[in-house]
Amino acid sequence: MTVFPVVKEGFPFICIMLCITALIGLAANWYWAILPAVICGFLLFFFRNPPRRVVYDKNHILSPADGKVMCITEVQEDEYLGEPGIRISIFLSPFDVHVNRSPIAGTIKFQQYVCGRFRPAYKAIAAWENERHAIGIESANCRILVTQIAGILARRIVSWVTLGTDLEQGQLYGMIKFGSCTEVIMPRDVEIVVEKGQHVRGGLTVLGRIPA
View 1 (cartoon, one colour):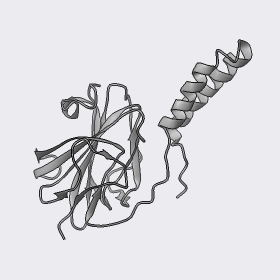
View 2 (view 1 turned 45 degrees about the horizontal axis):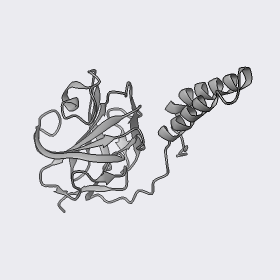
View 3 (view 1 turned 180 degrees about the vertical axis):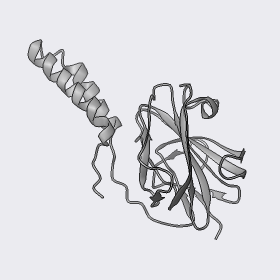
View 4 (view 1 turned 135 degrees about the horizontal axis):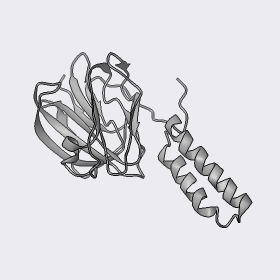
């Protein structure tokens, strides 16, 4: 599969800003085109999709996103797992890579989209009140729930998968535009190997190890 350095969802924003930059530069002065040119550069940066060399390991649960680990807590998960689990919340700032990757190889057995509000994604209440998209992934030895949560700037959750999709570990499955939070809920017997405050990278950082 061909991987482009910029995801296609960014093309309309980038093209519009390129046109605005050119029009201002040609109609007025190129000095006044500096600001839209900077915004265009930021959009290229935001919608970037850098290549990642994912090392497959069936006993590893990888980070689904780049960002900062905001909390690691025990929760009762009844929507998909139906049992207590461990939730790891990852906050993505506007400067992090915003594409999301599958933490494990498996099949999507659960999918749920919920409309909601747009509170700051780093606040705990956002997980319950904000727009979100959750997928439950099942492998041969583990089931996890991954949730994309929109933030105060985010206004659209993008998903490239659906119920029944088979995912490879580290495979791209979606993104959230302009600031967000991604959560992973895994079984309690998983050994957590990250800490609160740690910066993680999607498809590269191991969040937990599944007991053999």
